[in-house]
Amino acid sequence: MESDNVREGLWPIRKRVDKVQYFLEHHNGFFYILTNAPVNDTEMMTEGYYLARCQAEKSLVDRWQIVTFPGSDCTIQDMDIFHDNLVLFLQKNRTPLFCSINMPIDVDVQEPKEVNDLNPWYFPIPSNMCSIIPGSNNDFMSSTYRLVVSSPVIPDLTVDYDLRKRTFTILHQEEVTSLSANLGTVGKSNVSSIQQNLQLVETSQSWSDLSKLYSCIRIEVISHDGVLIPLVILYSQEAHRHGESPGILYGYGSYGEDLDKSWCSERLSLLSRGWVLAFADVRGGGDLSWHQAGTKANKINSIHDFAACGMHLIKEGLVHQNRLCAIGCSAGGLLVGAVINMLPDLFSAAVLKVPFLDICNTMLDPTLPLTVLDYEEFGDPNIPAEFEAICSYSPYDNLSSG
View (tube, helix red, strand yellow):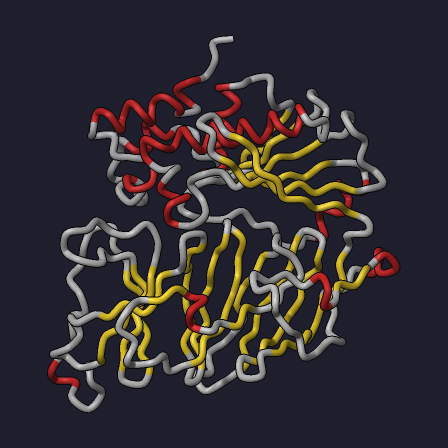
């Protein structure tokens, strides 16, 4: 809608299509559109998002030009647009990344490019296992972008990235008073980036972590069908006992949501007593393709993935075979409950918070507020094949008689 001609009404940018999503921003006479729409009329929707644009004129909004594809090993998650910069939220091998691209993008570009062809600046981050959350970046004219960065061993950092100078400033880091003497610093040499030639102007900047006390590793576990499942493992270097320690495996695996692996001081008590904390990024969470690989008839993949991660912890001696626990909340309770039925000896204890256990009866009642919306996630029980798939893993309907 034009602000000086509101009577003309809203402009439709593109007709609604099932499972196709559009995120639109305006910049300098163009609409920039993050979408998974088919590239042409003969194709299905793409597996991930790409960036397109069209001129912000009613007669030209249907003439899209593809600006960039993310690349074969990368996905675009979201974007923020400012007067001089475009900030892209990316995932590379299911690791979060942020980058800035100068605006406006060349208006004469004819062929779509990959992100790296647009001279991006990848924000320096301290670890490839970081949780990254955008701060309040509401000023369109600003050249500073704020993030809150943390990891299982890095207390929350508030960092300002100067998009014009391509430097960063650490504003604040959460203090852990009881462990302050053991905080190590991570400076220029350990900064993670997918560009090997990254140069940091402010070499004095550093952040503190607890890697001297706690090991935090990311591995990949082979699931039932050969797919590699990311598993982040956290434990105390001093208190952990190989083959003897207790452990907790966290899982969720629904709605495309990633497990929260940000800093949490409440974990310190468990770690100091030798517990292993593991986070399984099973299918059903994550980016678009990873999410779809764990929905509807594919939901069984999430369950097998979680079981494989639990068995790996025991097999490798990270956790004692009789001391592994699991935690799942809501749809994560469905995940844990299904694995308990499948492998009743795998977990010695489980914490299920508001668990979704009676999935068959719930999905058969369309009067409940979320049921119809959940058809896209778990399947429509009115379709026989999808009903059978739900019944095959429903925790409530697969309880052992023993």
